[in-house]
Length: 149
Image 1 (cartoon, rainbow, N blue to C red):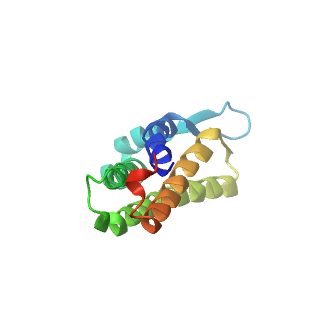
Image 2: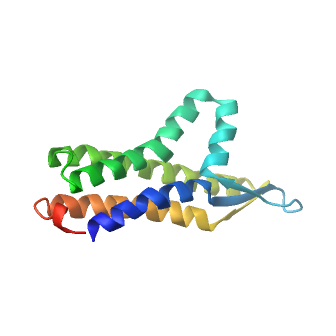
């Protein structure tokens, strides 16, 4: 069961990167444009490459590498001793969700823009949380990882 859930994240994570995280617009009069992880990263790459590298790592590479690493451990292709490093990668991915939430709060607080959360934010958050829970569950059952299909 753990293996199937973890492998499903290999599909759900890329879906969450393209799903709308929020809809934002300037002042209440204008239409809202959808912002996804990918569209946000594209905009960021044009403005600040250093920050774009950092956010790309937190939003895309950390959670996906953690999911792949956990799958390799579950299929006994990687030593279970890497579990602490995988757990840290999962925590780094949570930092990205915190930043998104902080930006939403800041934008709403200024009052010059309108922001609405979208379903992609919940999907992305759910993927990161599921990945974290799966790594904790896998660490508690190291002997059974290869048998939970």
